[in-house]
Length: 354
Image (cartoon, rainbow, N blue to C red; front, side, top):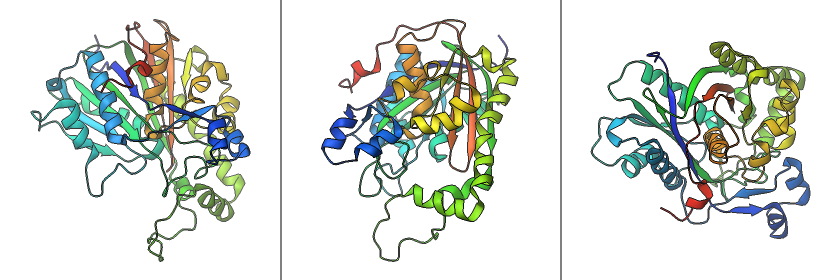
C-alpha cells in the first residue's frame, strides 16, 4: 500500500421527501416555464428538519457504514452554501457533537464556505490533512443546506438550477475503503468572482429589509460590465482544466471514465458546461437521478457517489470522475476507482431512522 493512498470508506445522504414539479406549479411556487427551464422532475424539500440536522444524520450513517470509530476521525469539515439556522454559530461543532460525541475535543471541526464547490473543496483539504501524517487515519466530510423564503427562492433565485434541501457525508481514510482516490485537482478563476456579486454594494440593504437572493441580476450586471464573450470564455474552460489535472494524476484519459458525478444543475447548464464541451453522455452521468433531487449546495458529489454505489450502478474496476464547481469561480475534480461494492441500504429507506 502506497503511504500516500487515500480511500473513501463510506458515503451517505439524508434527503427529505421530494416535491414534484407538477405539484410545485399547481401550488404556485413556480411557473411551468420556470420548471421546464431546468428540466427537473422534482426537488427535495425539508419542512421541519434543519441543514445541520440532515448533515449529522448522513454523517452517522457514513460512519456506521465505514465501521469508523469517532476516535479515528482527526478532522471534520462541514460544507455550507446558505444559512444554517443560527447567527454567529458553528454548525460544524454541532455535527461534531451529534456524530462523534463530546469526547474528542482535539478533532478540529471547521465550516467550509466555498459555495457549491464546498464538498469537493473539503475533499481536497482533507486529503492534504491526512497526507500530512496526522495520528488519526480518517476525516469526516459533511454538507447540508436548506433553501427557503424569504431570503432564497429555490425556483427563481438562480434561474436554470433548482435548489434542494438535504445532507450528505463522506469518510476519507488512509487505511481502507470501497474506493481509492486516484486523482484530485482544483482550478481557480478569480476574475469571475463578480459573477455572483454584480453591481450590488457590500453594505446591507438600506431599507433594513432582508434581500432576496437574485443571482440573475448579479450575472446580468457582471455580463454588461465584463462582456459576455469574455465571461463565456473564462467559464467554459474551468471544468476541463480541473478534470485534466485529476486525470493526469491518475494516468487516465476521459474515455477511461465509466461514470461522471456532476453538479446538480439544470439540463441546459449541464449541456453548456459538461455534456457539450467534454462529450459526456447524460446517461453516463448522475443527471437521470439528480433531476429528481435538485442542487444540494456543496453536497452534490457526495450524494451522487452514494447513489451510484447504493444502486449498484458502478462495478469494481470502474473509474468515476467527481466534478464540482462553485462561485468564485473554483472547479475541483476527483478520480475515484471502485474497489468493491459494499452492501448498503438505499438512503431513502433511512428517512425515518434518526
